Image 1 (cartoon, chains in turn cyan, green):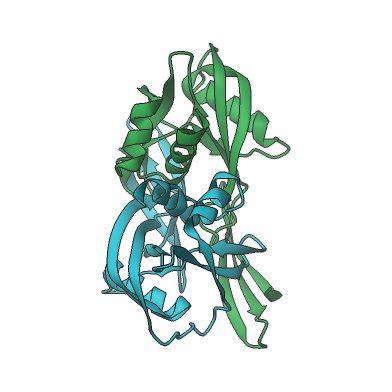
Image 2 (cartoon, each protein chain N blue to C red):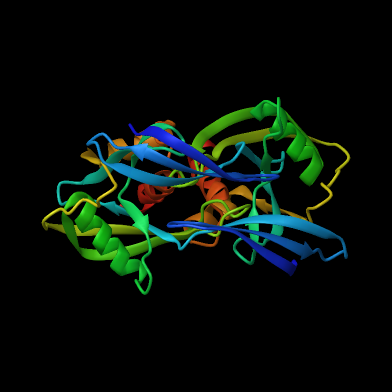
Length: 173
Length: 173
């Protein structure tokens, strides 16, 4: 346990906030902690009736690379994780799931960020009109689930949430 | 691809920096991106000759929880990921590995952070004197690897890097 002695807001942004805390450690010493506040996010492994999973490829400025990821997005205010999953699937790949099952809940970078990720498995997919978000440029693709799981095990997937979803799916299906 | 038009440094810290970029999207529109710069980190699944993996439990202020994690730490300047892995294992759990094998390389939160994580499997462990870092309060424990993998599959591990390392280990050992 660390008790916050003082908390200084550094930046309030669109997706993240940054604050700098001074904390009291259990042994009585003090330390400073940089904390990135994030609203949380969902990511969805959506598998169609042919056993193919949906992926989006997009440029990620923070890592200066195009990454292959499962559909994902941050939670909007008042939105439940399941609602967010359904919205992101519609916006990014144009499908709506009949079944949605939470398969993991984890922290992406607990050393410096509050981001909590809800991972879902979506099946029974039906088409809806795709509405891509204004600031995203996505290329959608489908890969057979066994092939995608193989890619995850062979180091060909470099996005954390996608890696976790595929490695868990190896046992689920 | 997104071309950076302008980049504004917001904060330069001990572990992270924050910058705000204006970018040109492929379709000609402009967008703003918040980028958390991180030096990168390593995490190590260290398994002793009895088949037990080492874990550290520590309070993570960013998520306001005690988390069970594998040993990990950020890269120091000029330090290779393998050197960092050996240093963190000595500092956090007091062991030195005879074999160190990289099992994954991934981005923890590519939507907003540059953090790249190197995951290692360490075996052939020998004791060294443990030197805990000044600002960390860690509780070290050992869990049999099959039991730890079961915990990962059952949702009892909520730290991303630990989850990935354990799910990959299910296939490695």
